[in-house]
Image (cartoon, rainbow, N blue to C red; front, top):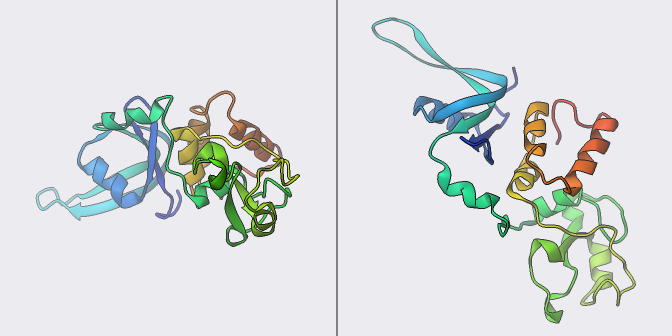
Length: 209
């Protein structure tokens, strides 16, 4: 069992990953009988009130992955033209907190969002046109393309699928949750290589920060 801080992976009834939820939200779904089935390992047992007749206390056992009813409206997230919200925290995780110009790893406070094709040059603020850059490289590149600045990209930016986005938003991911999520990644996802490398070095065991 783990502490109540561990988040639960919520899916729809087809098994499509939807979001991370805390234990209070998970217990409410169990109580409202919206949990269709569970996967993964038991996380914790939550004790409720005592029945006045039977004198028995209710217990809800929460699993690491729960499939829920009533989430059909979210299936558009699996469409080919879906793009998840773009924010710096998730962008930096996509690029492993590595500046894609100098190749060094930095803390979030030392990173910035760079537009590969500058906005002034017709570029867009979208996943396929933004990369993680340290502040020094971003300032040096300025309002130029990588070619004009003689700063070639170390990796090609990509738009995460919803399952990849859920992974990138995870703060503490258990091994069974990671296995479930990675099964929903596209075969060509750059994240597969990252996870294989992390597994080879033992960086992913029970969780990944």
